Image (cartoon, rainbow over all chains, first blue to last red; front, side, top):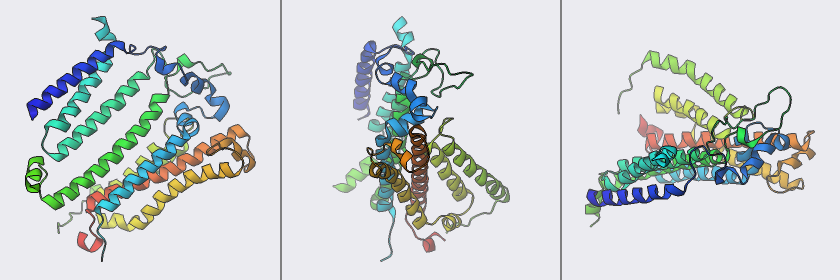
Length: 90
Length: 123
Length: 151
């Protein structure tokens, strides 16, 4: 079992390293992750939301709906632990 | 050779990912598998944060100097992957808590935490 | 059960440290606009201040400060605050979670209304994260037993 998993892990690692030949280099400001919608968030955060912290304004204002789903995920995890572990008096 | 040096962050995170992957598959104790899951998720989070970096840029908080010069996008680090990874960290902690609760229930039912002993008791 | 050894140094130190941790956590939540921080980070620090109380003292002492009923109330209140702000914005005429329309309720401009909405949301998230961290820790540490079996 250990030899089998070691072979699978090395094959997966080699495939992933082969995929990094296409990726942008580290620190490139024109990479596709930083050019489509992210400059709009950076340039308009103070005049549209009066919050200088870009991370908070994106998390709670521009992508606020995802944060609502996130809070529901944490709440559900708490409920799951209660259901699994608490024993009630009969 | 130079493409290894300019992209070495991807190589480091792929190595960390494969260490976590091997721990999830190759170990027999259940707690060690959960630790491997945690290492895997941490490496994914660090990988996304490394995508957001820009050369010579500052932290993603707008600096109010004297006077109001316009905010330019190449002075600041890309904030979108940071936001997505906040969510990912929270999901990591929630999964870890529920997995540990499962492990306590399995121990109560079977009396052991080794994978092959549990499978032997099931037959 | 296991006899608990009272250690005076740890008890005194934790008694001094826990209020400072809570004040710092409230500072991190409130200053999410101008410095790194926000709801998730402040909620984690609040939860860990309670976990320090559990580690230094007994689980029964800690459950006396924050019972499990109060805990579930806090976690539900956090989600209700978040969704409720969205519904208030919907009732005032805009889209769901469109905080600019909060300027009809409070005497602020629409831009400052968005800042106010962000602050309300971070408070709700802080409540939920704190309550769930405490709840998961209490469930895992006590293994579901009640107070009589813990002694």
